[in-house]
Structures are given as structure tokens and as C-alpha cells.
Length: 78
Image 1 (cartoon, rainbow, N blue to C red):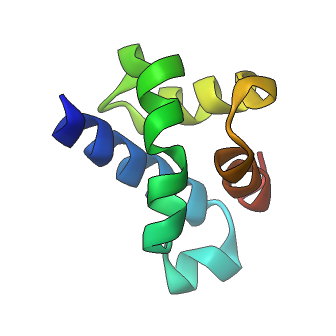
Image 2: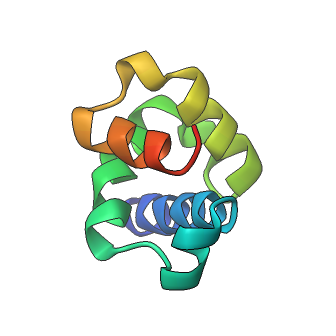
């Protein structure tokens, strides 16, 4: 389960980065990937493997996100 949560978080960050030209060029950092791993598993587990739905879920739950994940989501337009 942790491996799929990590994969979902990586997919989330990659798709968020694709929405921002500056970040799409450099790609997500390992720190950005790790920042949302726990939140993705706790708040949006039903969307693991579905990056568009995961992104929407994290944005919808922005008030509940950890500070680190919230900053990542906001930095990528969320």
C-alpha cells in the first residue's frame, strides 16, 4: 500500500508540475513528492492511480493538507 501511495504522490506531483511551465521544465523535487505522500493516502486514497482525480481531491481538501503539501499544491496553481 505504501508503494502505491508513493506512486500516487509522484503521479500527483508530475501532473501538477505539467500545469506549470517553470516546474514542468525542472520536474518535481523529491521533497515535493514526499510532502504530499501522507496527505494523498489519508485524504484521497480512493483516487490513487488517477492523477486528475487525485489533484482535484487534494485541491478540494487544501484546508486539511499538511503545511508542506499545501505549499506544493499552491505552488503548482492549486
